[in-house]
Structure formats: structure tokens, C-alpha cells
Length: 146
Image (cartoon, rainbow, N blue to C red; front, side, top):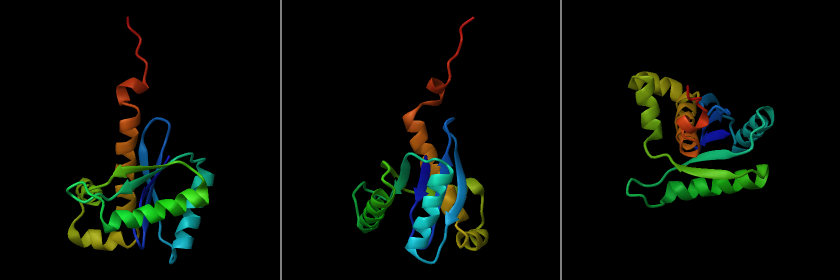
């Protein structure tokens, strides 16, 4: 799986393995959307990705606003270019949670935001949330009884 946190300038990326663990990857930070889409395409090929998980920015009241419609347009481009299933998952507060979990100061956040590190950390949280909804950890392993 490839987790995606869409942004106008940077696209955070994370890879999910068969064990259900999401790992941040280098963000797609090309100057144009086409360059960022090319980066995503390379990752899809390199990692044999079969499904995409995109953070979906619902408003705090659960409604769909301007930003969500922007992500819908991006998802349309993903579907057209890569022909893979795309799953939307609620991403409210994912960037804030990523910053909190990494313990960054405001100054450190400004420095690293430009590189896409925060975006990819958010993508990993989004993907991990989706993975945990698909296969609960306890069900992923078989336990033998004595």
C-alpha cells in the first residue's frame, strides 16, 4: 500500500507492508504536480503497490469542503494515471498528530516542513490508521493453544 498526504507543494508518502506497518518515505516535492506524480509512479513500480490510501480532509464537523474537493480532483488524477484502487481515510488533525508524535518545536517544524518530512509522517499515520482498520493486529497472527 502507498499512503498519501496530498498538499499543493508537497505530497507526503508512506509505504505499508504485509505485516501492517506504515513507514514514511521521501515526500514527492517536485516543482510541478507532474513531477510529483512521476515520483509516485516510480514508488508504485519499485514497491509493487497495489492500492493507494489518501488522507481525506473532512471539515471538523464531518462535512466536505473546498480542500476535500481539491483532494477529490487529485484522486481522479491518481485513478486515471495509475489504474489502482484508491481508498479515502479521514485525515483530520493528522499533520498535527505527526508533529506531536515527533516532538518537534515550531522552529524545527518550519525547517523540516519544506523537505516534506512532516507530510510523510502524516502519510504514515494516515496509512497506519487505514491498515489497522483492515486487519486487526490480533487477527493477523495465529496463536496455538497449549
